[in-house]
Image (cartoon, rainbow, N blue to C red):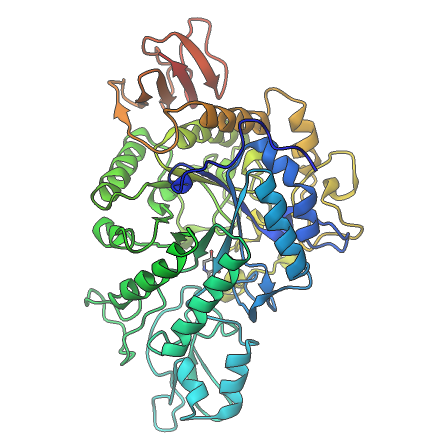
Length: 538
Ligand code: NOJ
């Protein structure tokens, strides 16, 4: 096990999360410790020195609990058991301790909106029948139509297709996602008690934070009325009842100095900020920045809006370029439409990976220079592109529920390449990994990149190291500087400037002392070429 890096001891302050760099591990695809084709906790433990060397402050694990994996683990059958494909609870506890020894905190993922249809509560509800107390933990209803043959309402699914499934006795149950993910009834006190107990369970095991899945969805209008466009409040998105739930969660977290990051997809800035009031969630993902096209004016507006919406509640912003649900950054930025929208994902979209990679390098320096905390998704630091998964190998329910039109999310979930010159690019498997790796994967391997000063990995390592040593980075303020059209320039502290050129023509740099880090070479006149970013001492 590597010794902690001298500048990597955990910040003693309680507000480490305000400026943290947090690395998202999708355990199934990070590293395979036992060689069976699926990533696991043994694989993560073996690679902790890599994460320490990268310079991240925390790891967020997407769900690692017992799960039939109908939705990549977001269908939890038991929160207190690690899925045997990943390891054991004992290994998870060891991992949390070993990471902490390296200065890395652990964040787990809790999915309050739904459980797996294999969860004991749902199995009991099915067995107990209509009208039973067990069914009251979910949303069971008789159907409409003469024989109850129609679903109880018309709510659209988050994943296309129906939101109701009929069971043998004729009742229907609600699932905003797949039928294997029945929605819980958050008006029921047992649902609240159980989740607060799960929070305590993981805080007791030393986790520093919790990511809250689909955080704006759990509360439902008790009448489950049909959806009417524009009617306020919405029957299941962003309902006021949620705030009381999260206040109660906050009091649980406060007892452990634990922190929350909410997955809150809401276009309304004021409604979004309500989740970040001082007695609710500490932070929430900023998807408006992620979805924003590679365009200076629009990015600047997204940054300004984000900072403005966070300011009144005193919460730090978060910045994220990709995660396990969205098209990988180098691919997105290499397309004609550089924004992200689930609705427009399609097969055969022309992509220029050289251009996308150049922009992703610049975007990395932009993102890591913004005020607040930042989330990196495994493989982002390697510049991995979105992979084309042969249709017969796809596992993501989003693909199937779209009738095959949506390529789904597996393209960003492919097992990582660690060693160029090893079977399966060093992922660790003896047999083919659960998702196939593209032929190009060895060229992205971490070992090759570690030895290449021009690689994406070295760029991320250097930037994250500077983020630790430069007091002006992380939490704090940003001051925009005058800049030509297509150029973003801002000051983070008296001696620290970030300039990003999104225009085609090279841009003159503002007055400065020297270049701290650049995403690509300056031109012969010392100007910043297009799609390039630089951090300056000035
Ligand atoms: C958001 C998660 O990020 C995604 O992967 C999952 O499918 C849905 N929530 C449902 O839990």
